[in-house]
Length: 115
Image (cartoon, rainbow, N blue to C red; front, side, top):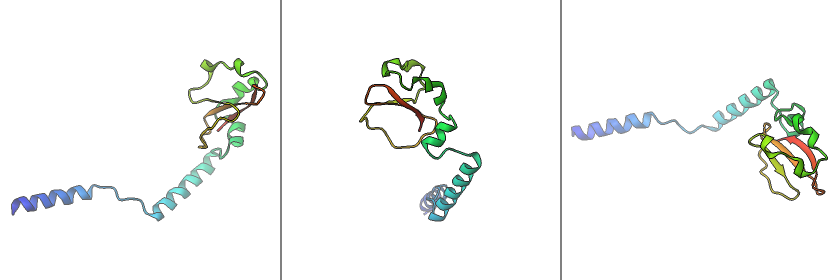
């Protein structure tokens, strides 16, 4: 009997430590808090805003626009930089600090953007 009581007490104490799943109300509150903090910090919401704010350092590579792809020194690019060739599939997640160099159909750098 004592063993049963001790086992039950141990199980109850372990379940009390579990974090409950967030409710819809919790998720709504988190979303509102994130949106408010984003607006206060002026976090870019799209590629144009991020590029204008130069979040990824695109201005350092703007001189590559119009240059052939071979002019890109890959060793000088930031770690998460992407060189996007025509027709290449890329993820659609928005990451304002990621540098993206788009190559046009003519083999030259068409744009340098943050997304």
